[in-house]
Length: 326
Image 1 (cartoon, rainbow, N blue to C red):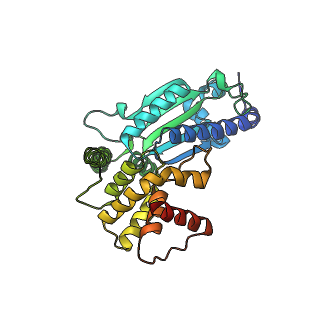
Image 2 (cartoon, rainbow, N blue to C red; image 1 turned 45 degrees about the horizontal axis):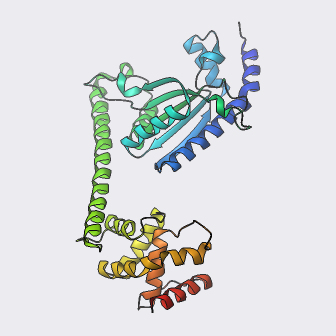
Image 3 (tube, rainbow, N blue to C red; image 1 turned 90 degrees about the vertical axis):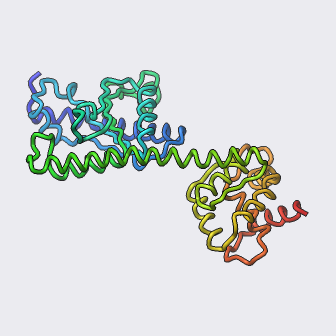
C-alpha cells in the first residue's frame, strides 16, 4: 500500500488511543509483577512514539508497511539496581507475554569492546488478557520493553547526549576513553551485585547464629545487623526499608546499645500477635510492620523521655504492652 504523509498521520491518529492504552496497562502490569516478586527498581517509564519520530523512521528504515514493521510505538523501560534482577525481570517478561523478539545488546559487542548494554524485547499481549476491558483491542500492538541496570542506563543516556549511534561515529582519539568508561561501569555493575550478595550473606549468617543460640548477637551495630535482628525476631512481619532506616537512626541518636535493643525485641516478640489483633482486629491476617513492633517496645520499656509524641491509639497499645509485661 502506498502511503502519503497525510494518510499515515490519519491512521496514526486513529491508532494513538490504542498505543496510549497499551503503554499505560503494560507499565502498570510490570509494576505489579516486580512488586509481587519483591524486585526493587529505580523507574518503570513509558512513552508513545510521536508522529514526527515515526515518520522519520519510515524514511530511515525504508518501511513498506510501516504500521506492521515499526515495533516501538509503545516503548517501556525498566531500570533496575542489580544485574541479577535483570535476569529475573527477563524471565517475568518471557512468562507473561508473547515474545516477538528478544535481544541482549551486549551480545553485539566483541570480547575486546565495551558499549551499550541493555536487554530489548518486542512483545505482544497474550490472548487470555485480551478478554478484559483494559486490554481489549490491543492484540495486534507490538510493544518494546527495555530492561537495564542504573549504570547501563547512565551509559546509554550520556552516549545519547554525545550524539554517537555506533562506534564508527566516534573519533579514534576518543574511542579508547569511551571504552574505558564503559568497562568501568560494567565492572561496577558486577561489584554492586557482589556487594548485595555479601550483604545478604552477612545478614543470613547472623540469623543462623541467632537461631542456633536462641538469642541475637552481633559484634557490630550497623543497619544490616539491625535488619537481621528484625528478620530474626519478626520473620513473619512485613519489612519497610524507610521505616527501618528511620528507627535505626533514632536508636543511634538516643544512644541505645545493641544489647538494649535485643532486650526490647525479646520482650515484644511474644506479644506480636496481640499487637496485630489490637491494631487490625482478631479476624484479620494483617501483621504489624517489623520496625513498628520494635518501636512499640521502645515506647513501652525505654526508661528515658523521648521527643516522640504517640497518638491516643498508640498510647492505648503501649499501656496494654506494659500491662502484659507485668
